[in-house]
Length: 118
Image (cartoon, rainbow, N blue to C red):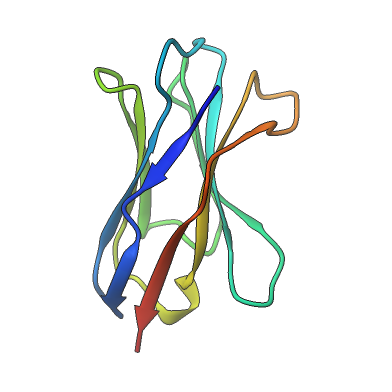
């Protein structure tokens, strides 16, 4: 599975950005697509995930109520709508995929930089 992340940029605090994760080709309904981020000088952390077959979503507590993950099935793309952005959301964002909910993520896209200015 090849993943292509896009949509990062520079935004002021309180603003919005939408990230896209394209997965060209056919994606099994058991796939889980996730977004992770790595803030400067910190470890990579989970942000949100979307289970393709069921539509089940999960969010990190730090982004609940501000970020929304969804899927555009026609384009085989998973979107991360980020609203009410804070400077602490600044990070390199990565999308990832795994075959089902029971295994680790083993497919990773390139990162996209999100910078939130105060």
